[in-house]
Every structure is written in C-alpha cells, then in structure tokens.
Length: 73
Image 1 (tube, rainbow, N blue to C red):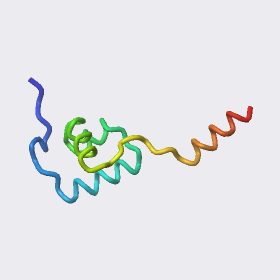
Image 2: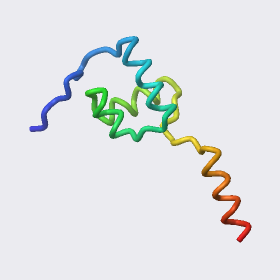
Image 3: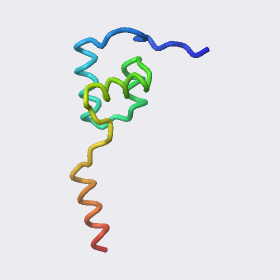
C-alpha cells in the first residue's frame, strides 16, 4: 500500500495557500508542487479547482517572441 504524504487529511494553512499561489505564479509543474508541499497531485488539483486557480503554465514574453520569430522564417 502506498505511503500517505505528511499533510494527508490536514487542512490547508495560510502559509500553504501562500506557497501554493507562489508556485502557480512561477508555473511550477503540479508534481513538483505536490512534492514540495507534502501533498498528493490530486489534492493540489482539487484545491486549485475548488478555488478557481488554473494550473496551466502561463506564457512568458520570451516564448511569445520566439514563436513570432519562428513564424517569420
């Protein structure tokens, strides 16, 4: 049987919520967020879904510029 993470079944603290928002803004992958926070990927997805937070990476200006340059060629 799989081992439960350290925060299994515990409520999200104010610090957890701040850390989560920071990781999302940095476009950290869900698996890494889960590992850093000691939670499962499903709990991360569920929290994001319940709070209207998107886990999709945000496009940066550098990526947009690179795409435009590739289209010009």
